[in-house]
Length: 254
Image (cartoon, rainbow, N blue to C red; front, side):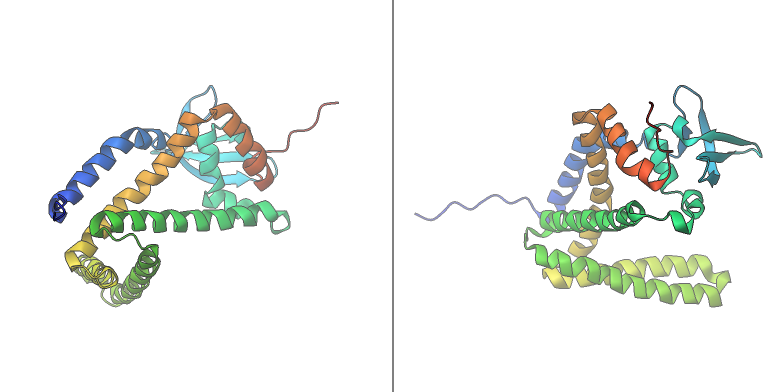
């Protein structure tokens, strides 16, 4: 007796459905992640809207330039809420304030983590996106396709940056053409690796660009929704913010 054929939703219907389901499932995660915004929040005090202009590594004092104003507000990093402490850690003003003789292993470990985690996240997101579009689960294809697409796009970006330097008056046209060509070349390379059409490669890129930040939002959501926020904040204070110099070391009371 011949096997009954499986019902497979066509590609052009399957992809929008997957996107809709992902957005519906991860909406709470996005709302949680959006709490880590660019405002400087202080425990029990007002929220400051502005940019960090200076960080004093010795006194752990921040100088924030208020948005739409020339005013500057100074306060210590111990007053910051956890989300704003992360902002301080990755801000150029803090990184520039770290003396060379104060660079320690925690700084290098965090640098490695901040580089490695996005790469792993993007690779996983790309693999999932490619599987949803092509139904091919082999991760080796993703390992080849994603770095290859980045490499080709990077070469093209350098070419267009050179053209922008030579013809700055044609900036809009160069950016528009460059974006389209870069996307087309990346989609073509991905389609070759997966033995699919260029349209499939382009959809993988679009799905991947949406899925990666959603996965990152899900990580934040899971950590703070299922874990104990107080314990998490204490852990990060002890293992991240204090060793790197964002927070001052607490002196043991006699």
